[in-house]
Amino acid sequence: QVQLVESGGGLVQAGGSLRLSCAASGIIFSINTLAWYRQAPGKQRELVAIITSGGSTNYADSVRGRFTISRDSAKTVYLQMNSLKPEDTAVYYCNAQGVRSFVGVKDYWGSGTLVTVSA
Image (cartoon, rainbow, N blue to C red; front, side):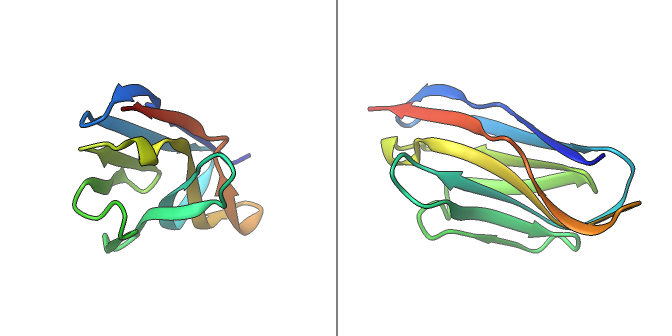
């Protein structure tokens, strides 16, 4: 069974930094794209950053230049968040797209990790 487990969330002051991690577990042959989404209270879930299997990245305008997405293996992705602002407060979700395993090709979500940025 494929699972995504996030870690690294917490409370930080504005201007500070956090690093989120997401590891995919299970028998996985390949993952096409890994991404981070976030959902703030009362708002829709939004894409924060995405990285393809080839290493191409893209970011939401609101985080470009402050956040960096990276992956050090086919199954692990990170989100380095610098210069954090109170408006970055949200639950951050890891997303894996095009996961090839014994059950076929599917997309998966982690359960989320809370990031709170105080003013």
